[in-house]
Image (cartoon, rainbow, N blue to C red):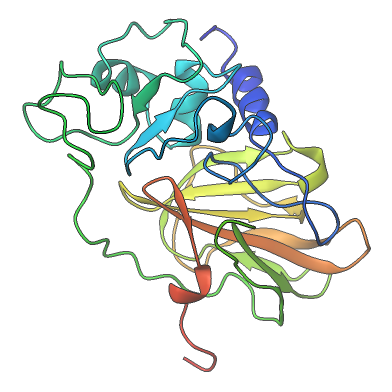
Length: 249
């Protein structure tokens, strides 16, 4: 399974996608979209604490690691698994670093693992400060439980810039309906995603700085020039507008 990381990553991204309004697409490169096809609710409706992920059909250690910006060997270590382990649908995995000394105590179910309390090992308050990836009108706002990000209008070819410094953990077209997509990991808890580009200016593994061009604005299925921008904290979608400077700031 780990011999084809690109293929498994693409399969994972596609499995976690969901069609919605605005061109029929919502950018969902990570789990926990309520009601998403193949999402966490497919195996259980029980909430999973921050720093954990419930396995869905088709997931592998490598694909889960890629989606959360981690190394497969770390995911395996944190959950006491071999890197080529066959995952079971409904299994809960730790996807954030555990507290010191917590290795060897895999999380079995929310609130049920001795020595592994919910949220253990998650980073303290993030010091990431985001800047606007593109200046333009907000064509769609974030609605908790309905969509995972915002849509920012622009002009075709406008530069899309990294909202903060970090490392590119995904850059590709594995989800064709979303156009070329970039995902950047900023620290242990914060990840941003930029979808519907016309082309990408970075590649996977690149280290980028805040404001660095990473792509160019494309158009959605309706021909509207825009990008889809998403912020994840501990693997969960949060309102990007709460993280971005106010207009004029």
